[in-house]
Length: 92
Image (cartoon, rainbow, N blue to C red; front, side):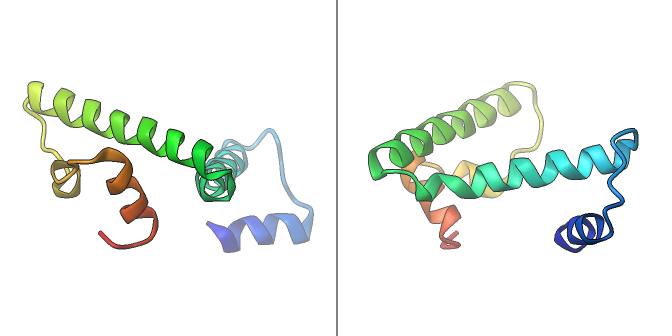
């Protein structure tokens, strides 16, 4: 993803009518937003980590109720915020 994006930027060939280029841009923006949480004040970062943990738990509950497979790491979420930070730090 990064090399494709850098290539688009350096060649100035981004085409807003191209679905692939727009998807790539959205992916880069989403990735940047995901990485920015640890740069916030701790209280804000922790609040967002808790929200993400709650979302993970909701996803697990929904997938189980629909009989869908659940990602193994999602089943281990006991303290959602701690799990999110462990995942962000690469500890899981």
